[in-house]
Image (tube, rainbow, N blue to C red; front, side, top):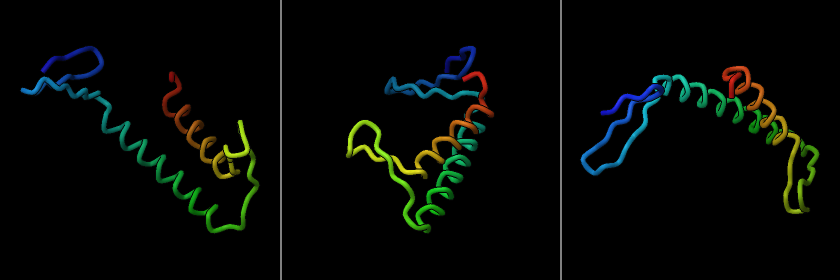
Amino acid sequence: MVNTNDCTVFQSMNMSCQLLHPDEDRFFTFALNLVNKAGILVRTAFEQPCSEVHTKMSNTDLVTETDQAVEKMLIENLSKEFPDH
């Protein structure tokens, strides 16, 4: 086991390493909550009549209002929780 400033590195016999950040559980819980919120947005939109669909770079690169809403929610929540990133 090697301690660094930001994380602990565990090295096993087969020389593979696993990084453990001190806030790993907090990060995981936060990410899981965001995924659940995104799922609720997608599920709610799926049950509604079709929303507007836009294209990005080509006619096969589709973006829905739901895609944009999920992206906005993720960015806002991540920025609020981790303002330095």
